[in-house]
Amino acid sequence: MLQPIAPLAISAYTATSALGRGREAHRRALEAARSGLRANDFSLAPLECWVGRVDGVEQAPLPAPLDSWECRNNRLAWLGLNQDGLVDAVRAARERYGATRVALLMGTSTASIGATEEAYRRLDPDGGFPDDMLRPPIHAPHSLAAFLAEALALEGPCLTISTACSSSAKVFASAERLIRLGVVDAALVGGVDTLCESVLFGFNALELVSRAPCRPFDRARSGISIGEAAGFALLERTDAAPRAPRLLGYGEASDAHHMSTPHPEGLGAELALRDALARAGLTPSQVDYINLHGTASLKNDEVEAALIARAFPPSTRASSTKGFTGHTLGAAGILEAVVTLLAIEHDLVPGNLGADDPDPGCGPQFAWSNEARPVQVALSNSFGFGGNNACLAFARGERSA
Image (tube, rainbow, N blue to C red; front, side, top):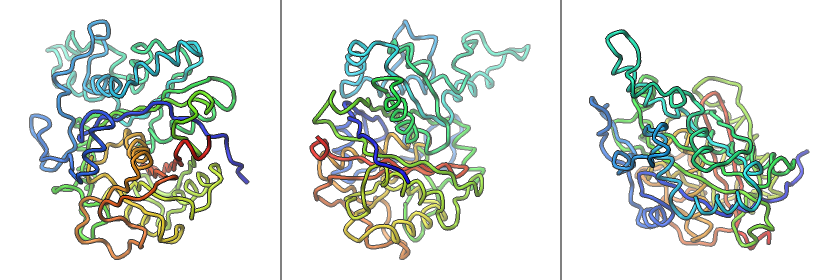
């Protein structure tokens, strides 16, 4: 049986998405129930759908010393990192512990594959990449983490986790293990994924992309809206930041059922959820809010709604926030972790935007519009392709201090 872990402090965190740059922009959008989705205007031949696109990425080149890493994904990573004092917080951790004692753990699904797509579109007459794209590191899945390690001068363990939509939730679990085992003293976790042809046309080929803005848990939901985002969190032992919010626990599991369809009874998702509660030392009745995976795909929402209905009392509130941001794939875990932390910080349960006609399979736990109520403890669910599931448990700092 799993035993509770020692909580970790989240001493700094931020997100950049279609809702804006940084925590304050996200808080304002959530409070106003304002979606960041818009008609797709990405690529030369935009697919007919809606996307969560970040404004201004094209006008935000990397600093000159880092220009060998130029690509949309690393631009968004740098843009997102320079919000809410994250760079200063990482610098302070590096000076406090040493560069080798800070881990860098990033989740992504396609990393900088958009740059590789561009290189193939512009092949030389002899079939080779054009000269300006002859930069092998940006054509590798590890591009994101390697770029950030150089940009932040970090020399500790550096990992890229790519388990589809659970990628940047699972980084929290890896960080806890590294800190608990004494390998490092702090970890910068996060994730970045950007719009590119591969994800837009790839998910469309799987018949998962909605032509309209996504409507999680709506009776007439018709698929996902793809978004892009960058998010980061700095994890340390609680004595380093006694008043900071806490990571209380995590759960990871795999359905081992199908490449793109969840287990029909939510087997892996429930294992992840139960493990997160056990590591956090929580009962379901102690959970105030759950940020659901809630993609607006027919089967995923059905399985998750049934899980929430059977595992939690009506007093627990639950909602998906993908109607605000779209599904940011490998960045979904960290983006929704940040939303969950904002819910705790501001006692705000975000409404399940887009569900005008709620699916009757949803239980009384669902918050269909914003609710102002105390949020001491909250969970964030992330379920990915291949049945890769993760659940994170967070709490207000005062609870464990």
